Image (cartoon, rainbow, N blue to C red):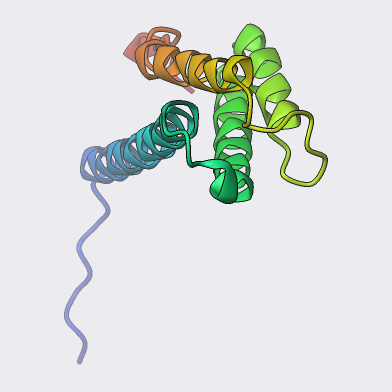
Amino acid sequence: MPPAATPLDLAVWERWLAKGRSRDEAATAVRLRSVKCVSIAALLAAGLWPHATPYEVVVRFLVSAGAIVVMVQAFKARFYVAVGIFGALALLYNPVAIVFPFAGAWQRAFVTMSAVPFAASLVWRGSKRRTLPAKLRP
């Protein structure tokens, strides 16, 4: 004979769901922060290191992919200015259609300055989040 099932406690279930959501949000934040840091490192390496030209396609791919990831996150947060900025960065650093090479001095300075939106996105990550009071949550 199987053991008797205990009735479902709604409060325990809701705490379990909240715990899972908070773990998922924390893991997503870590992954997003990692993408931003890799993009910053790639841009600074390409802008400050004069021998980065052979690795230009790799840098462009990393920055373009990072910009797309941050753009999607900004779209979900309804921060449309950031969507436009990171969309422009994704198009500018597209590895298929190269807009400018990393060869000249102004190009390398531009590449270095392109790290600023990624660094700024590390700051604004949590500033737009609004939570509803417990009574109003669905």
